[in-house]
Length: 212
Image (cartoon, rainbow, N blue to C red; front, side, top):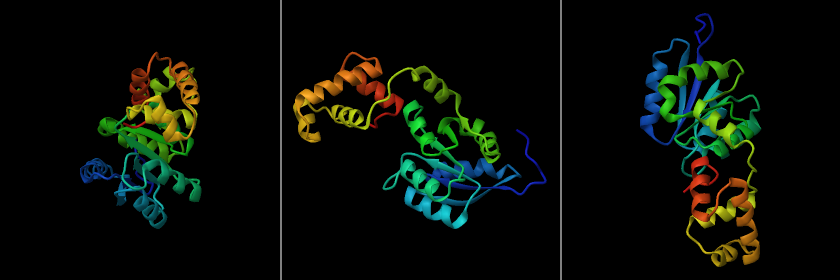
């Protein structure tokens, strides 16, 4: 995509808890005459404050951050500013995580490994009102589109399973019966197309359904 030299520069807010990542983005943007970094934030709470103060054209938001994470910051910003254009940045190519971000109003989803080759065009694209999902994630979404979506309770069960707990311990942790836990696990295995707990946890982590 070619920049329009007559337009004002696209004002960008970067949000990531790693200074080196923010510096890397700044270095890429510095070479673009139609873009400028107007602010930075190191966590979700800061992002909300900086967005309100600066009202950037495009926000680049990491998902995994301490305190207030990227999803919560995204939800708050979009609730207050429905026209906010937020591009999610992440290390993980999980389709479930991408869909969750899009559900809450993200207009782009980029893997950090693809920033140098895709960042600039993505910023220009979303600034025009379009959406962008990196190819790896889009492929995963298409691959799993026919599978059932786990309910919040099923995700909670799977998260406790990932911690290595037995059915009895899961039941105690979630205040349900062991029979209910077994029923949830059966449904989870069916929806994910797996045969056991280990496979379920591995696949769910890869897809971004749970975080290990």
